[in-house]
Length: 147
Image 1 (spheres, one colour):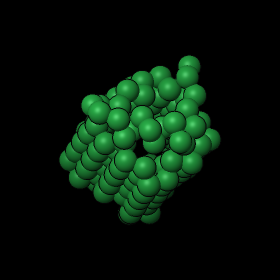
Image 2 (cartoon, rainbow, N blue to C red):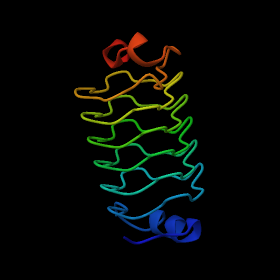
Image 3 (tube, rainbow, N blue to C red):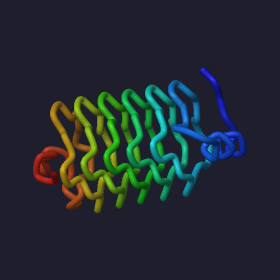
């Protein structure tokens, strides 16, 4: 699995066409406020990365690993995040409108104040540590209440 520095990633994102980041290891890097729009990030590893306030609209993020990723206020509108692992991810205030979250793991994720309008949430996994957009925890919230 390839690893990229922030500088290398910026050069790739600024290139022509749809950035191809499928399977790339971006763990523990700081990509705050970067524009990933339309990127193919299928199977990428963002474990522990900082993508706060980043633009990730229209990305293919199928199977992405976002364990412990800091993604507060990031824009994921229209992303395909099927089977993503977002265990303990901080998605506070994130824009998750029209996102496909089918079979995604949200155990311990913080979705407080996130916008999930139009999200597809079939098979989403969550636990008592999951914080929903209205601040409810675990089973007190239901992913279908926020779409």
